[in-house]
Length: 274
Image 1 (tube, rainbow, N blue to C red):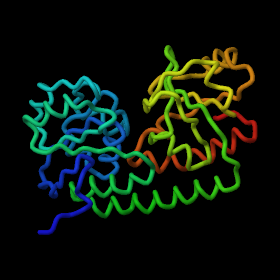
Image 2 (cartoon, one colour):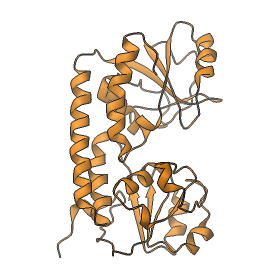
Image 3 (spheres, one colour):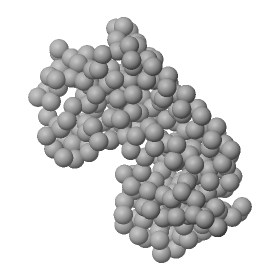
Image 4 (cartoon, rainbow, N blue to C red):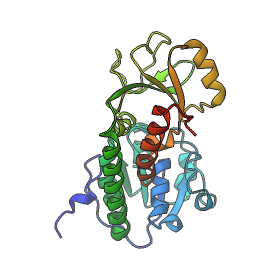
């Protein structure tokens, strides 16, 4: 049988379709949601504590720690045949430890909204959900087109996207978040540091940005932080943004691409984000 290019993961591993009784552990919150969207919740035997969507499905799936502090012995006892990982969210030592007892490690690394096409086809092809994956591909195509059509009427705008406090942290242009924001003409500025998620100093880092966005994850920015930051940056426009809509790939990416044009339209009109 010829190799299937859709079944090559981000580590370059050529997979073969799983058997019907595959036991799946997912250590990536957004891909846990994707697996459920593809109708595979009944085959999920483990998840992280951050795998919270869809709520009605994940409650019955055992938790095995966080994305970077996996309880390996608990996971071993659940006997997964496949573990889904991500290069950004999970660590190399975790992957190396899992390789000792898990037959199949599926490594992912979407770096732009368009990479979700390959992700859908990889997961769908592995676990017998090719048709459902193509439905998601069609929805993603439409959502990308809608976002770009909306962006065509807007001038590009530089935004400072904050993901953490104490220390302040942002995202570089070479991230999935930045490339998702770019679909609606929001551009994050280059950073002096080479890190993908660099620490920055405020207010020094803000003057070039027309808008400061406070993400609701991984730091849980809330309304009170708007007031605090406005005191530090009195001349900046500041708004909250739903971090799941910019940083979660998988099926959530489709909702995110529909959310961003609505959010930008509201903010450009001077209305609250929600």
